[in-house]
Length: 280
Image (cartoon, rainbow, N blue to C red; front, side):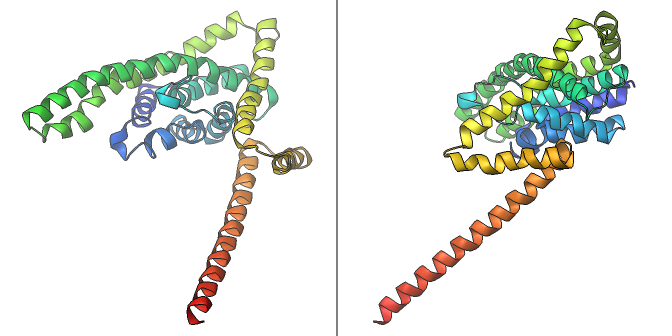
């Protein structure tokens, strides 16, 4: 499996769009296209292997499922994870002949995600630093009363930052990906201690993301029941991460419907009581 020029260019373009507010706001860019779960689908379509792309994206999403950026502090850049880490992990899985849904495949994918996420942090702050230049131009335009120039500052100039810190790194790394993976394969054979360590550590990394998520959402002991139920279903049915995500979405939708109907009933009863009091 190799990545050609067009595929690398498309991956670089999506790396830009994943963090460009001008695409439709952060909701579409950073918080949708930038997520590994969505990025896995995009990479799978571009590289012609949707199943592997989605499985790798789901594995990496577990690692960063509870990632937050308080005050703009970024510990890992999921944009780089999605459009550099996932393609490299797909290349590595094909090169080593591993199943993306298997334990070793998940371990390798999450290890790549952790490494690239750290690299992406440098690219993220590089983008932010370059954007300060355009911000200065924008403030100058405001002082001069040239408000039309703000469209260029907001929608045009940031592309320079993202081409330099998103498109080019993604394009170059993906183009060199096959050679890099082959070199890693020669240096780190499958039965070596280094690869076994990568598989082991990579298999444990999703636990970190889940633990951080539980720390944020668990407020009482009973909250663990649906969490453990998911593990029981996964063990009994032998499902992979993608199917588990779909089942979780179904239960989340059912819970939302129940709570919505309860709130409607409460508001209806309250309005009826208010009407009775007014009649009296």
